[in-house]
Image (spheres, rainbow, N blue to C red):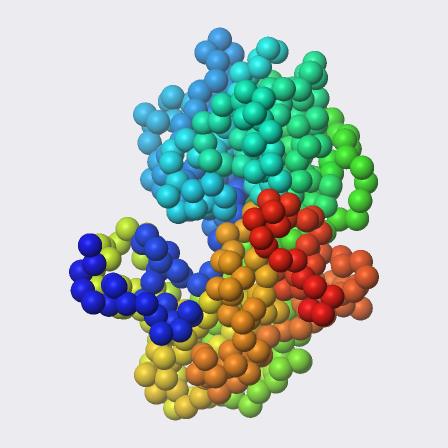
Length: 505
């Protein structure tokens, strides 16, 4: 039951929901959720501890839940799945002792499919299946865009699903395959899957990694002593002091054992379309993508933004932490001093305090505080990575003005987010995306700022190394959230009524 009248009120405007937060049920912190993170290792002592460290480095990709599966000769497979952070669940000796063996995989998640915010423990990966030739576990980053159709077909043929996750379809497809070996069954299963996937799987002796033909989601290969590592990002290799070998190619499957790594390409070759938003926001700034430092790319984005949208101001301030490298680049290019005008509370937990009305009204103040002495009387440029609903942007603007700033100018390090992502990112429906419903001028007025500018899509492409910008006829990246150009048709969503981009748009 609602505590007071405000809990019953419908916002006057569909985007006037800044009092809601995703830290608590029903909330919205105005950021896209970073899909999931996968990690696997073979040929090391105490694999579970190595996997836990890798997942800790990938925690930014999923903070809702995590799981680990290992195998020990003579004992079989062991698993543990928990809600919450890796550090709170996979650090005590008692838990780790239940996960013995030299091979293991793990997964951290947001609920990009399935129950979305009301996850059951059965939805937490990795998933496990027992086949005639032995067991296998699988962890998946991405989204299967024909999962509903596959699930319906599999259930009609007798499959019994244990979770609401689209990833479980892969296990059932493998079970129905006639392949003699588990990698063969995985190949056959993944050929029936549409969408985006980076998969890490394991048998009793093999660590398997695979990317979809478009390579939308990342996956890298590393070496740790005589063992091998698969991870969503290179930062997860750094934490265990593994050597980065290379990225898994789009459409490639690798099988790592104590004897080495085998590679082959089971899918029809096609032009890759890596997710460009990995460069903007999802990946950690200390990771390497496509041979490029994520941090340097984001700094380049800030430089391009300063060239495209200059403004006369006194100070460049990032919206921490994701806007920091771009703000530094904007400052360096424009010559306007950089300063930490907003300070993040690094110790804000997801269960800090019960969400009473007074606490809920504090909004972003629980996480961010304005450096009043620094911004008072100044013309401030705020640099952020994106605007989704705009709720957080409005609240930050209000905080800056309350602290005495003379002007507030927003500069956004990505083009307007106009379309939902169906490849593993928990994006609001299109009618909830600010840029899908307003022009840039209308957004500026809605946010109540002196100016608002986004980097152009060509500017973003230049920042990631495409000197001529976006190839309109054959885009180099997946940029569907900005352009509406979906490289894989979102079959399930179209069948549910989603309208694809028209020629007029």
